[in-house]
Length: 547
Image (tube, rainbow, N blue to C red; front, side, top):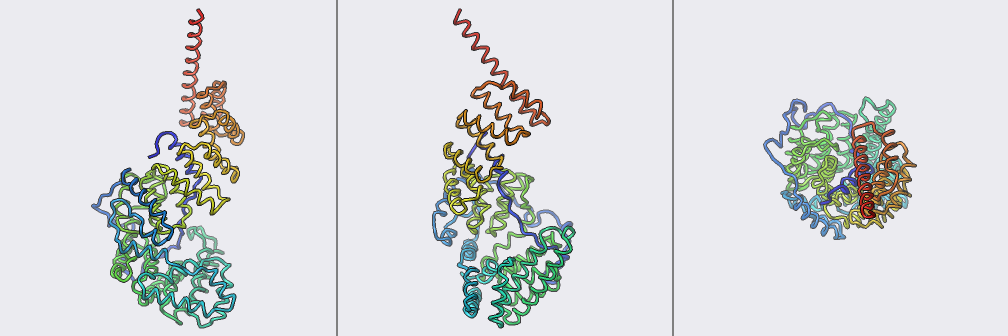
């Protein structure tokens, strides 16, 4: 595992530059209605209901090294489905083979891209679009390896972008009796409504946003109702209606949609997943309601094994997967209990972020990897995983991953910067320096990269002239920050180079304002004292030799 000052320096700097995963915020709801029994409030519930009496553990280094070796081999497989199927489960876990394989099938199945749909509509082939969507519905209903095919296609294609609106309107116009056209239109209106509302709490949301949301939800309702009148088997329409009820149209509306949706497909993952989101205590639901819903779903797991994943939703809510530097080792150890069974990519990535922010890379690298197993397009989590690989002697893998991301997005600074850190961990300071300079050319204002470059030259490659030149760049760009002057003192101490006393005096006059800066100042003064003593001893030796 990476260790020592270099690891600490990289940790401190890299986390400044990585984006945080944004959890999509849904609107609050007043209560969970007839679908599940009324329950006590979340505030009254005893902590750790499902986890009471259970004990977890943190992964050992040996477990993580073995896991990563197997994961690296699996990731060499080009076919996405076979790669997912070959992937190792978390160390010591008891994932259901059937559920994990079904989730691989669910996530990796080929979906019709919106560009293809748009091309068909533009060329007057709305009937062909209807035929393909009818095939998706039939496959979803009759083939185990096609479960969720239609639902996932809706999720991929019909987002809240205004750009897709003309195509959907043309589809309805060209195929006025198409249940799929109206369902897609309503689904997209619901997504647009969520974007119009924004992610703030209702009290902080402008009235104009709420008005736009309500108007779009009414348009969604009109199209969704018409869609299920034409064909009541179209399950993504019910998912959109449940969400619309949660947002604004009310509990009775959402409950009716859930009853009708589950009547159409009692084993539908998307419907149960939406209901579990709606049952979260933060939206007025309860842990007990979540447990009951997950239990109801498990009754249909033989028909649809991915319903098994929903059993982790309530324990994950109990244990807290917040991305904050606030989790104790004992709390993080419970993650191995929560994820003893296979879970969703969303919960796995949340566990990765929570573990990373609380300084437990052994958990973070495993859960980021599992999230990527099921969703290889998670760019932010791949960046975080690249960083974590360096903690477990997988810096060459990290370099290769970053290089692939650079090919896909050559103007993105993040993978360039991460490849630089990974080269530095390998001791390849030449290529590290080149990547840091390239990252700075892409983002000249990235203070962390410039500081890491100076630190590398000073502390690891001992290229003193480059270190001095880089430090001058730091001080010029950030004259009011202490690091440049501290690094200057480090160079003057270790090369050594003249001027350490002047640097100490400047640092004391401008930056000795907090305990951390004062500690740095004391270190610099101690270094000066040792340097002065060494010079004095050398002078005495010369004098004695001369005599």
